[in-house]
Image (tube, rainbow, N blue to C red; front, side):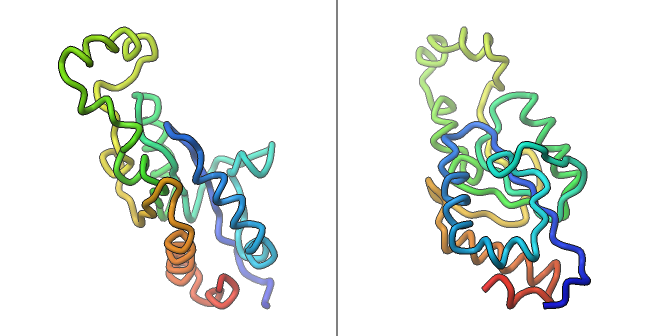
Length: 168
């Protein structure tokens, strides 16, 4: 493979969720590490490394629902630094199960209001697409591994068509 190309800059970010997608992502690395390390620059993936770079990303993977104003601001900042944003997992794609409190009855909402206030949460939990434009979504809890690989391959084909064979 021609090594004279710029690697695809990857960021993996986690908000309100169980982080099961992060676990699945690391499991996928068992099978794909040899080819992925040649084409991806894992700039910001806290599960993989201690010293992360937060500047610009070709692809930002977002796991989890958006539950606080801080989450909203961070997500908007990530979007501004990223060519593509991929929502991964049920919480990011649909908001559920993290957003279950959105459907609570008025008495249930009243009973938990002190927690919403204490933790500075939004009145309602949001899916990623409620806050920023999403270029691809991978549903499931955890995410569907085959759909994740298809999304990765499609984004590689779009961003660096010459690298497609390396991700197969």
